[in-house]
Every structure is written in structure tokens, then in C-alpha cells.
Length: 105
Image (tube, rainbow, N blue to C red; front, side, top):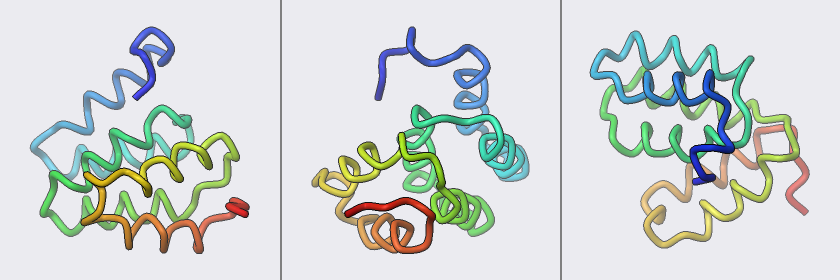
């Protein structure tokens, strides 16, 4: 992840909310990130997906990745797909690449 100093304070606050134990708060935060997030939130979102078993939370993360439209996310997505520790979620990440509006060629 990018150094903490490069992440805007508002984004850092939203990333903290992703760690909530209440699914409703996490899903609401993901919705806020759709409008206010940047490429720095991709890894925390992936961590939220991997750490959660609540279907609503996991679905919100998948939906977020499926709606990506900012080209700054491309490199981060590719890097996350290549990382061995993400092998168990690679299928979801690749499927999101097909669904979103980014050009991964």
C-alpha cells in the first residue's frame, strides 16, 4: 500500500471504517468510497473482502471493483492479481477486470 502520508486524511478515515465489525457500516463506507475513493483504497478493500464472510460486505466489494473507471486503478489491480497471497481471490479480481470500464490491454 502507498505510504500513509500520501493518502488523504478523509480516505484514511474511510479505510479505518472498513475494519468495522458491523457489516452495515462497512457496506455504507464502500458506497462512500465509490464517490470519494482513489487508487489507495483498492488494497484495503481487497483485505476487507478476504477478511469477511458476510455476503453483503463481500458483494459490495465485488460491485466496487466491477464499477472501477479510474485508470489509476489499473496498475494496482494488475499487481494484486499477480501476488501469490491473493491466489484465493484472483478469480474475483480477474472477473472484475472484465466487468469494469478499464482497459487492461
